[in-house]
Structure formats: C-alpha cells, structure tokens
Amino acid sequence: MRDVAAASGVSPATVSFVLNGATDQTISPATRARVEKAAADLDYVPHGIARALREGSSRIVLLDLDPLFRGSSAEGYITGLDDELSLHGFSLLVNHGTGTLASVVDSVRPRAVISLSGLYSPGREDSDDGGWVDGLAAHSAVQIRHLAEAGHTSLAMALPDDPHWDRLASARLRFARESAAHLGLAEPVELRIPMDVAAVADRLRDLLAAHPSLTAIACFDDGVALRIMRALRSLGITVPDQIAVMGFDASEYGTLAVPTLTTVSIDAVSFGRLAARQALGLPADDIEPSGAQVVPRESA
Image (cartoon, rainbow, N blue to C red):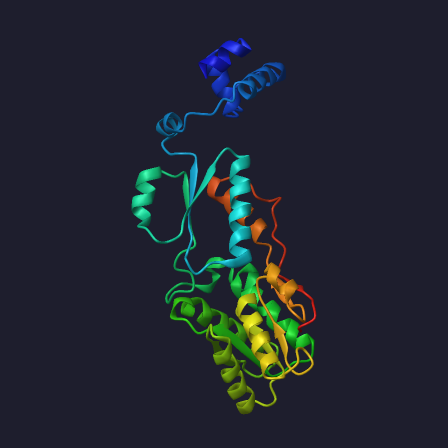
C-alpha cells in the first residue's frame, strides 16, 4: 500500500479509502483514478490477514454444501455465488460437508456462512429452500405439470436406488405426488432405479406389467432419465411413442440422447448471485431468479 501511495502521490490512508471503496471520504475522481491505476500497474493485492484482523473477519464467504447437491444446478449456484462475491471483493470457499464446519469457520474466520446442509431432513421445513414458491418443490411441480399438459394422467417417478440419495429422493417423490394431486392426476408410482442397466430393464418390465396404463416417467435427474431410456430401448419400447421420459436439471448429456431428453432447467446462477448479496447484507432488488423452465426436446 505504501508503494501505491508513493506512485500515485497520496497518503497510504487515501489509498486505503480508495481501494476499499469508502464512501464517507471526499476524494476527487482524478485522485481515485490515479490510485487505481497505480494499484493496477503494481499488481497490488490487499493483505488478507491484515484486513481480517482489522475488520474482524476475512473476505471469505463459506458455502457449506450438502454432498447430496450435484449436477448442473449445483454448479450454476456456485458459479453465480462466486462471480457475485468477486464483484464485491470477496472469495468463495466451499466445504463439501466432509469436514467439521466449526473447525473450518475457526480456521478462515469467514465473513458469512451459507449452509445448504441438512435440507429435506426430518424436522426441516420445505420452505427453507423456497418451497413451493421458488424452491425444489416448485421446480418439481414444473416437471409434473408439463407431463400433465401433454395429456399424461398415469405417471411413475423414477428415483435412484441408493441410500446415499434417499433423503433427496424421498423429498422429490413427495413433491411429485403433491403436484399430481393438485392437478387431479393419479398418484405417481415410485420406481427405484439401480445403476446396472440390465437391472433397470427388469424393474421397468415389472412396473409396466403391474401398471399397464402408465404413459410417462418423471425422473429424479437427467442421469436417471438416460438410464431409463436405454433400458426401455432394450425392452423394445419406444420413447416417447409408448412411454414419455422427462429428466430434471438440464445436463448437457440430454442433448446427446436419442431421442433428445426433455428436462427442467433451473436459474441456479441467479440464485447464487442472490445468496451472495444476502450474505453480504447488500441490496438484491435487481436480482430476480426466473422460475424453473421446461427444456422441450423429443422424449416427452
């Protein structure tokens, strides 16, 4: 900071005011520009430890990310969060739920902690993530509504057959059934999908034998949907002529399937940017995530 002050012909205090964006100081635009140019020319980087001691916390925001969250939406959320924090001079640190949160907090002294751990656990409210307004429940309803509007009245909900995903899968099944009930549809049949495609085909065969009126399968995510489509093909069942299949989370792989996969896209980047503003206590009126959108392709 002393080097920047010498190069720009001002005091270190003025450099501090300019580079920290102080609004309570009278500094001319020309002086601000001179300091910013000197800082850029000298590749000035604020001393994080000194700043943390002065401000009482670091310029780090900690995201405690539940291991359940993966895929396009999780990546988009992190991107939006990271980009928005960077605009305000903060860095993002992601804890993937593998360590003790308290120890991470003690180590980095974050400015704020955003916790996505424990969502959809017993005792937690569905509204904790936005619920039926702009949370997972509302996003799940978009998937079921699209199938209903396409004329499907008998649905299955395909979920991963893995205890690791059970909490999130159980929530998705509940949201699908509540959405179907609201639309006047029969309760979606639960279908648990293993990783092995041959085993998926066996379960699909049993499902269709038990529910011959079934015409569509809503899927937990695009990965489950792609396994369903491959298994249906092995059974000689065409998509969407005999069974419609709809994914969720708009992964890039859906465009590579035959037929291409209809799915649901979530504006996760905007949710991340909104979370960053809220964590920093900044106005966020100009950030309004769009609702979940159907990505119409060929499979449903």
